[in-house]
Image 1 (cartoon, rainbow over the protein chains, first blue to last red):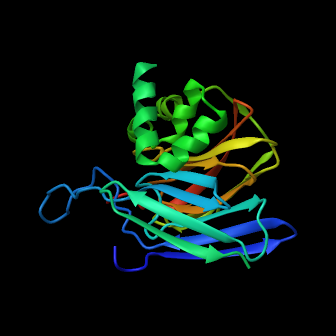
Image 2: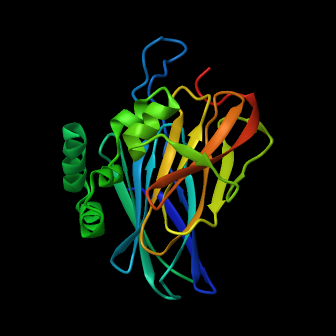
Length: 105
Length: 156
């Protein structure tokens, strides 16, 4: 995907890193129909969000179509310090992926 | 059991990094959970979803799980939910909207160093309980909070 879809902010406070991330994605759940044509809308949502830091997987989230459009995911972890890099990537049910890196500040 | 092994194999190929992480310390049948489970995310009933995802649906209520959610959500399409817990050794946190067509909304697998805290935004079809299920030390604990929804966010 050419367009950047992930925004990350990672902040270290007293050894705990708080990560806030926003992804741009329609998050179309399965089982919905187009109101006008009555045709089913193909589901299109992020299934997996993985966050790595220092070569370890810190958190991996499994999402469904029940998560709001342009999902926001926030979590906290320890074991990284200021200036470290972290990587966040997602994969959706149509096989699209994207990833982004951010410096912990 | 065979089914689950299959899911695990698929998952480890698709996300090899995840597979390695799982293989490192948790090679039990329950480690299947690391992969996205179609069964769990299409289940219409909460116990079915939990069985498929976490291998069990026995939950104990816990006051040590805090759910921060609005009492009344005007827009069901975007309901901010924050789950935090002081329970040690959290393995995963799952968020369930009890009255949604597909109740299991999201599940967060916590890796090394992750704290018992997640925040996200979910869709809610109608008024109902938001259930947070925390898995720690192989046991499930849960808490719930009712959220009133004025306009539903699932279809319609």
